[in-house]
Image 1: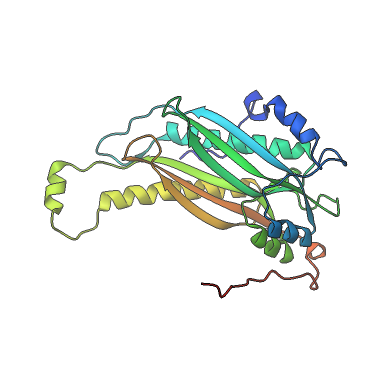
Image 2: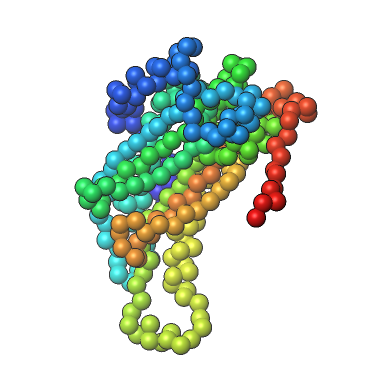
Length: 282
């Protein structure tokens, strides 16, 4: 079973549009006189400061990818590995370019990572994968919160969850993912007739969906191990059909890999605690 756990390499992985250089050069991370940009709300900005971090700049990575073609056997459950590899590579290219922008700003991490996909009118098989987030730096300037490889951590946690994680003495390592595009077998006409009017489990469908979901979760877990983390929080599994028809489905597992820090990095007990207020307005 391929893990698809290696980052893209070569010129394509490090390429950045020249326009990004001029934008980043004027942000707070690259120029002390520059302004920071972020997708943080006011509450998230304040809470980030309470955790000891400052925003540097809004960072973006993008990849427009042509997804190839692979046909599954009509009556067989099977992974479409060509499509799985394509969907993984496209997302990793976007993530790698977002991280490259954070490196320009000497960031310790990227918070609020969002990974989305969109189509254009050029054709159904052409998809854009976009990764966005806010590059941040710890006020201590020690770099202790970076990932074990020395680069900025990535995390899709909310600012509230990020604060709680830091307060507990842990830190994000990487936004990790696992994907599997899977062909679910068709039913024959005789199978459909035998099941008409009966309550019964669809064993073939259950087995296919179960295996596809497990493949995506296993690959996400392999990424976390490769990133030298101790665990994953905020795991979710999304299911999408995209452009391949009703029997080819992508299972995408995502989460934030974390690791423990020393007690000296834990927030003081006197730090303000996030609160939730429920209004009485109808």
